[in-house]
Length: 302
Image (tube, rainbow, N blue to C red):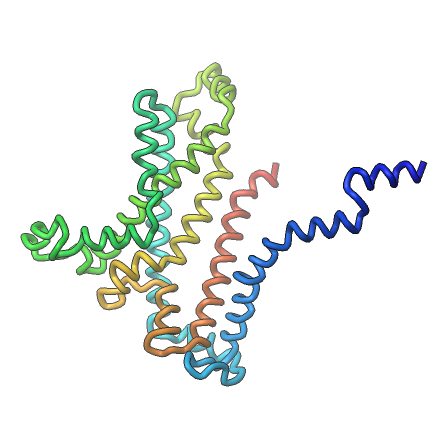
């Protein structure tokens, strides 16, 4: 009997050692990718954060925790943190609100449904850097289509801190609303129609169906959108680097821009930049963990 079982196992997948080798072979590309593009850079950043590491002279020795103390004392650190949090909050509220609203509209629409979906999704196909360059031209007081308006009013879209912030927010909403609409639409389509039918039989209004059926069953999708939007907002770089370069007067300086400037402009200090990067990573992990825990808590209590 044992001989028969062994022969059957060999016929199905070969010896256990061979099956394990094949499994490792399939996993090797992904493992190599993660090791090369995540683990190795993470270890290098941790080493930089605890070292005196000028850009052009390399590692000059350990100095932990001096880089972290200097990071908190940097003249632009708290300003960049405050602006980044404000920007992430505004973008998250707008993207989730508009994404859910458009998903409900597209789901309910019977005519022009395909046209609406396509029109809203088209900006998502454009790269963020390309979209930022496009809006840079649109906002230009010399070559942009609104140059006459800026000349008449004596102001520019990017010339004031508030104008620069909301001009960039408009770019991000235009670029990413379709993507979040698609995520919300997938979540909405996953809700069984029988649940809504039961609500209608019980006399629930459209608002009650939305509040007590749609939103609770859409929690996993909303959690995913929150994680993506908040993470993207806190790691904002390209849009501000292209549109405002942190100006005017460093009023649109994000944390990632500050890290880039410390590492490659001005101070050329990779050690301080590494410390700032570690702090940003820890903040992201803590924020995302808190979000996921908040969305899972009601389920765990039940």
